[in-house]
Length: 141
Ligand SMILES: [Zn+2]
Image (cartoon, rainbow, N blue to C red):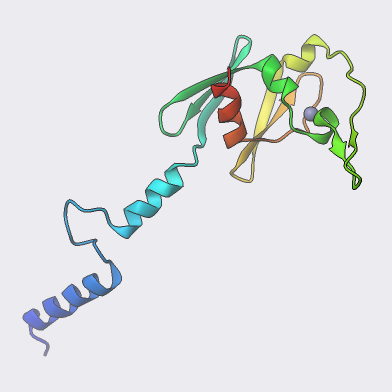
């Protein structure tokens, strides 16, 4: 029969050995430090077009607005931004005038937990905007 006091001693040792800082109140444990680093990568909690802008509500409660036209023109896909070949030459298609539907938001999907892939009303859907890129676009206007 193990006495209650010995059990207490073992669990104290366990807590100290496995959860450094976890028992100390008022100090940050290693785990909460990890969480704050994770939270630095913001993710959209809600994304919806409002008028001619895309409204993004981030998971930290802040909001960003990016004009849809600006967003479409900043489409990072190879078709829109061109591709650089092995010799460093940029191959870019002719700048075709975009139809008004090119700036109309149809839907989007989330890609791999790091980005957002919009589908535009003209059918274009190959650009993947990382959350970081979206934030930069919003902050730049
Ligand atoms: Zn594109």
